[in-house]
Length: 257
Length: 323
Image (cartoon, rainbow over all chains, first blue to last red; front, side, top):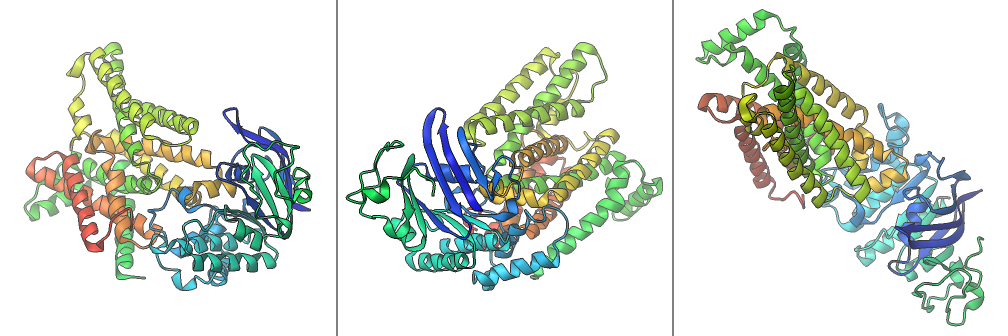
């Protein structure tokens, strides 16, 4: 069964199309990368996958269930861009944030031993147990993103979605973060990464989709030609992307794999 | 646990015990007469007649309830950058009071102004939420329009209802130490139990949504539903607090204790407890000083709370935006 199925999805803001006729399938355990220039619809597609936005047409299924009926939030982990979070001044400790991973499992009532064990294990696995009682807002950007990753680990999520998780994070912290992602993915965690940094995504993902409203490439990361001028505005469905000689890998970009 | 955290938790327990043993029985009119007589005698033995006045027990009870409810709701508003919502709903509640005076003037009905204020403020809260849903944010402009619009409509209602002849609007604008009668304090008791009960039940989803609304949506929390609950609770707290603090200053009890506590506490729960301690402390000190020096209670309470905030700023050598 696929972790994610996107079938001919179109969405627009006030009649202005942001995502057009996109079809993608992500297998369980896969590391899937979504790239594209600014304004290409990456974040919009991500919000559609998570059910935050509803498509104008087409169908999205998560673990085989239509997104409209899907309510198993505990199976999803999400690491947003730092800048999208409102509660940046909240006096939360690292442990309190990681504990949020258990909230979808237990929105009410006392935490059980299994919840506490999952929180402790997530803190250790992401190597932030020494920071557990520190205030989140006093940590560096890279450390804060690790905490959000630990929240997803504590949730024991089966699908991890990340939206440009290391924007503004220094190189060393980035490498450490992606090393951690690779480790979690090798343990079977399905991973969908949206990032504008092609090099990073190609290095870590199994497959890549390149989006510019519609898909201009969908295929193995190893075959993705990074010299492709993928910033092609208004590529419409059915057209062949200008791919600098790699047309064979780019020709079937709208075909679900 | 740090000394600060354990002190704050101990103070919170004391407040909870006092509410259960003293203030809720007063609010619901079940406190034995002997308690008030003993309180009066104890006050007189130290040279104060403060506790010999029945209305002051109502005021103190209402004040303590405000000092608890304001910060509880404020913790979720302030950290979502929604502090202005409180001020807006206070002005909406003012329009409610004014509408009540109009009804009173035109029909001669026995209208409970506080009741009308609650209905109108909740209506205002739903309108604010509708605007937020439509615009995708609690933006400055729609909130500002709602704030000034409510005040303008309220002023027109007062004029249409015969001016200031029927009710002392000044008391609603600036707060009044003697405005809370028996029925008002009972209503406050009901509001306290409602606010504390709902927030305790929905604590985790509310914290999650406050911290990271987008992820809360992704993990399938009913964000719209919880936002609605929060804003309706805000309207209820505002109307309750308006009696003592006044329309102009009421938002302070939602913002200032939270801002102070968020600077000094480590952890959301400890900040919540600390903000309640600061809120109740400011209210009690403010009521006491306003009685002794014949000052406006709202202004006195707010100045004391801001003093505590400045103390927190100095003691942490930090700012709220970069705690």
